[in-house]
Length: 222
Image (cartoon, rainbow, N blue to C red; front, side, top):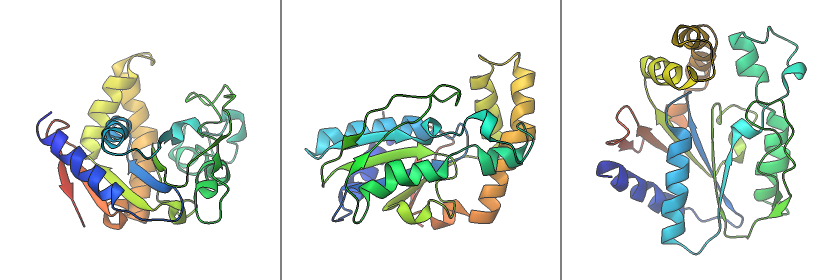
């Protein structure tokens, strides 16, 4: 894996160095197609090799609001994407807060399928006190969620890369590559630009992974 293996090892070391009296909640933040999910999966694998502590994986794509509940803005608008896509109350109350200070460690890792249309019958599990929780998703450092992370990792790519990777990935379920590109230009990228401009997640994260070349990412400690 080359440099990627080195970076994954450094990230794992940083995570295992975080001491809390409750499970350590790690947020893997970034824009669409930045490589958050892949990084989270691989990082969880490295952690499981390095420690006997429980390692839990979760993703915000499993905490979306049903489309019929997104009524304040047009459903395909960047505003709906930024303000209404994710159920921040459920993310806090069913995943992050129970694993934090004073929590009972009883959490749920999903409420809906990533298409947001189908409810998931996800069991309530109890994390061990020393668990590590790796959660990936967009907008993790919004004010509604920011206080619930013990370590923030931001995966950075340019918006040109978001468009190229995201459209190529989503072409499989959309009508065409052009349709996927239009969706990114008109919905995802404007919504994520708003997040980057307002929240400045790369500046606020403890660790930043420059992931333009996934085989050779760069780790920055701001």
